[in-house]
Image 1 (cartoon, rainbow, N blue to C red):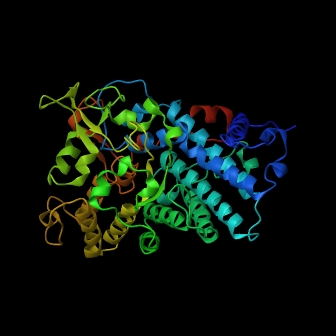
Image 2: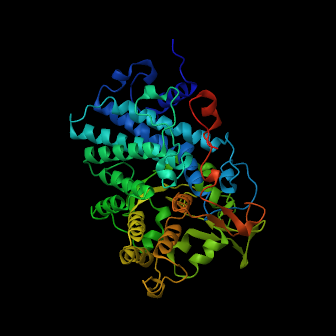
Image 3: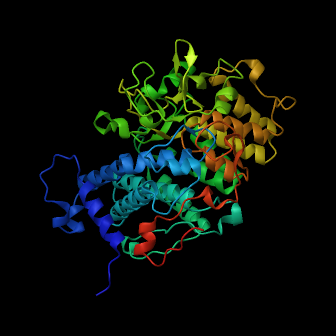
Length: 486
């Protein structure tokens, strides 16, 4: 009898436990019947799909996604020692048995397992509603693979995607001792799934769920990461021109963290957390923010660095300053150690709850910024600046702060302008380290904090081994086919 991988057993247990979680239905336990019976009706498939969305709202997914994709950048300062191993991402002192990478990997393949279960049960063309559900699960499978390869595989432009990525799993039987596919193979697979998802999905759903436009928005990002600039522009245009989304007005933009995401006209797809999903001090917002009046709502140990605060303050009207809350007492800025307390409030006060938020994964501003970056790389500098200035105007930057071809201010190239604007606009949404390293730019962190012995000259080159994470040690131990990252 063939030995079953311990990881596959773990995935099966997790999937079974979440499939009908929170659903008040008179059904047998999932693991007491065959999958044919479990997916007997369209309602069953819809419930299972809800279960897959629930997988990305779990702490093991949302929190680790947000920290592992953001803390290795230069928009976050770790102010002092803490017990969260995600801090090793901020200090670049990764270890193979970090629980954030371990749990994120397991939760990702749990999602992939759940999507595969459904994809294998729906025959295409039976009905528009079933095709919609099949498309949503194609999207979720692509989403999971892409988020994994960004963390565990080197940036695509390095070696044309020839380095090792993560295992592609299209059949659940493939979870037994899988091998690592190349980064290029994973990207090609993600694109294939997203194209299929966009083809199948016809329903207009809010930003809590996948739709045709959600798949196209992610295609724009994936192609940008591959430096396929024409296709990145193509799909950004299709989302922008769909008429489904508009840039939030400045006032709405400023209060966007407090809104439910489906009321924000800019949100394309999010990690939707309801009041019942509130993780309180285990939420990502608690890591960044602590109410300055009471100092009782969170840990508030990861701050905006001085260099980012100064960059935003070049134009004091910049609406993005509202996402940073300096901690003053009697007019005096407070510090933790040597780090000024610039609390980040981008994940707080949804529906009036201190640490409740629905972190954004895709929004319309990114589509303009994707298009701007792709145009800059294609030599269409004016088109790139047009999109950058659109974003800056929305941020309430005065006309004197807009860019022209003759005045790039402190930047040398239009691409410099674009990457700086991405840094400001998309801060804390999981983009910055990837934007640097896929563009062969070093991380230079010049602010006091717990990173290196010389805080003001902390530099990580894009070729450094630690721009990606180790494959979790547990996976290496149970699967001899997995090759560890150096």
